Length: 145
Image: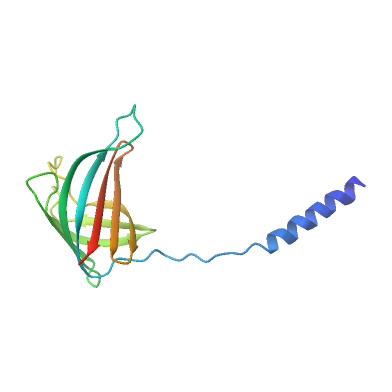
């Protein structure tokens, strides 16, 4: 009797998995050519606390050219964000920025838009989130003009 129950459960499992619906991968929407304005935030979390604190905040303008794959960032460069320009590509749900103004040696004194950033596009909203380490990150919250 136990043997028939085992066969029945195996057949039931086979039929159940055949009914599972597969959903094809749909890549996220990509930002379009244009000018985006908004805020840049540098977030930090001490290792002994849970919420992130905003260390610094700056107004930012980003221009994207989707055809050429280029970007330009202008901001209040007296604070924490460096004005920069360069190219970008897409890689598995991330935007990868290559900043032409990023210093070749040493540690930059201001934040450059460089490296991997998770992104989300919804209507006119465009957000970028980048992690520096597990205790720091960068957030761009932009709106298309």
